[in-house]
Length: 135
Image (cartoon, rainbow, N blue to C red; front, side, top):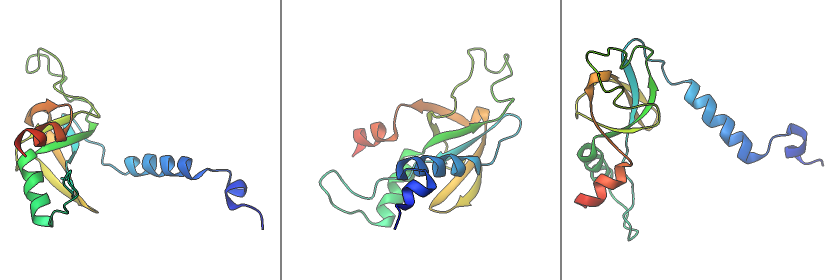
């Protein structure tokens, strides 16, 4: 029987990359001055290998209040009077947001949030950087 990978012509690693791109195309496109972010979901295991409960992971997520910027609206940070030093963040940045900021969209495994451009409180290089300081 011929190899199915050869028939399709796609290697498994390539297919996974295609799946990621198609999943990102499903993210809502923000309008105006809005951003779409994906809140950080805490890790389910400690460095020592101890599995954490769902409650502990949720508390870790709430404590960090970090999110990954997935999309930025066309008018975000365009007001030079309001943002004289330019954009506070861009697509792919980790940001800090208020606990209840934005509108929530439930997705499988969590939620997305749609925020206004001025609701970003700060940026970080990685959510683990903040958690490492306090854990």
